[in-house]
Image (cartoon, helix red, strand yellow):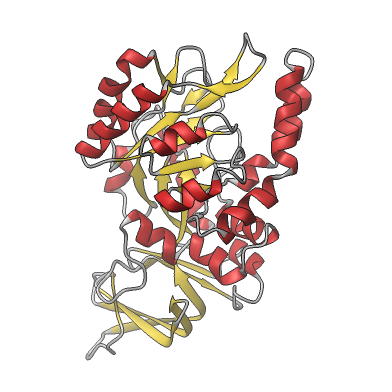
Length: 363
């Protein structure tokens, strides 16, 4: 709001889990906790306010077949926005979505460049498909193109084995991750299965997506190294259907996918209990719908994470992890207002009363 008008948010403002205030003001598109003097026009919104939700694993600009036109990407971003997701870590996209940065009515995006996968070992039209000798060069390329992240495909089905298997030799992963870090980027990897995880963590990776293969013997290593996970439980829910569809051709893989699905909540709860950072992500944009960050928070609660910590995984803690502000004095006013206290029932997060982006009420 830069036209002289002021937005007044009152009720309960959850600045942090421990800092709860009665009101905030938005002046010039930014948050202040000091009552403005001489405001020409004031609009008041009441309810329970949180920082805009974070989807830390989302693919704006993709569908099941690859990159989509700008108008489709716009609809995806608007769907996320209207559901309260105002900050997205785009965990790999073949589409150029830089134009979104010029739109103050669309969520802010932190990009990881394009996926980097082994040849014929990922979804068609998604990734740069390369061999290990080229990994360092492609990681450097995507580190320069992205917004501080690079996305590897850590495992995928090996047609000869008929099951999931690791994509990268330890030495190649270690050299590539070191190069990303040298260039100031963090590295994350898609990993469903177990066998890629130790090498990637010991190679210095910063985050693992999905992490369904996280086992009790690996949890201390993740915790010691501070490697985060983004479980994408709303996506893992599709594993039984995927297994059914591929069972005839790859029965071993189908059985593996069912086992990973069956223990998914235990995996996430054990990771959380061990102190591994857990963040909200949906994996929207492939075959999964956008706008599901609130549903993912509810999945984390179902897994056994306390409500406030699950909310934090998609708001306060997630923003700090990604280096973006929450409801701080002077920060861009990106917030969501709800009818009821989301700490009492996180399902409230799926139904925003008002969405405020860059100080404007947009939903």
